[in-house]
Image (tube, rainbow, N blue to C red):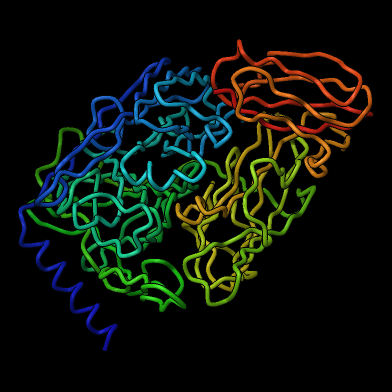
Length: 564
């Protein structure tokens, strides 16, 4: 009876939404060139009737941020300014960049501070995005709106007969499902999410020309998986995964995207001038355990009983209008050359099991190999240019979207079976269902850094914030396994931490080399001392996080300090 009532309530909700005035989705403005300025700030907007909702946004936006248009091989420099009243970071999700520029939790931007990453664009043409990644605050900041799209173009994609008129036949769609409280304020951990936003508006609609159009789909939700499709099971064509185009369009009627995943699709509207259709989520087809599928009972506390769980619902109304001049009218037969890595190329294999305290846990905490994230623990050290197979096994009752920074991967298999054709391109997020084993293969090229690590984590944001995250360093070429370690840190103490003046370093009574680097990897201090204590003067340091490296007898211990 309880489940029946949920379906009835959801059906009524969807019916009421269709009778309300439709809101045309805004198309985010674009930033182009080589120098980019992004200012994260507090703002507000009217989402539902009643009280104004407090938001986070970039530049002139009230919610979300501009779309960055980048070209492969170009140099890009950024000035990221933080005016949100809290510490944050900015992660370039899916981008292959140096660890110091990746924007993970080791690169904090203090309130009213700035961050200046710069890197060459090495990614293939695809749809990426940017969002905060500060430990414990990712859900709060990203769900409030601090995110935006990145479109990378390259010479190979430019030769294809694809729609690319931004906002006309090439449409960015950031789909978020979230929960607001009784005062219309965001609930970052809300599991009764039923407020659907497309590019920041509810009851969304858009006009599309009667021709072949390209939709860039991003699931920007904190936890919900969408099973995208169109009314009447209309066929569409998947042309790209997270990190690049496929070798050929794949005709489908559904594409499942978990939080953080993207897909580029083509929709043939040639004969539909004057007609209407809906982008939908066919959530009734999602299995139990996938958040967005059937409601699951909780061992304690309220169930994850959003009225949208386990039913089919409309996301975006599409009104088909007259075609544009020089329209794209055909679906191409082929796209780009995609050469997946093969199992025989792998140098190393690793296994990560998704775990929980018990099989009845539905809302966390969840772990990787029974470990919560520790900023001071490096989980893996990976030699530069290694090709690795990671086996992901979900032993919990909840599906988890696994995301890795730095590299894209290919899905080798799911429970020993090849992935479906629409999932055989470059990926950086993969959904692993309960009791499922997924193997992925990737190569760690270009960048190494034995000071700043990259992250891997669940992209359900509350799981990530609760510690379902690990980190790895890509070691420089020629690294031979010297004893670089973080275990045994009880032998070294740094205090007080944070500090504004002197940090006392207590270590083993032996000759010690000390090096201090900022989060950009720049060395700010080196010295050598004997004895068990050292007075590190940080009074002239800028505010922020620093890495202190201590070398003794060929081994290195690293610890972080904060200067405030």
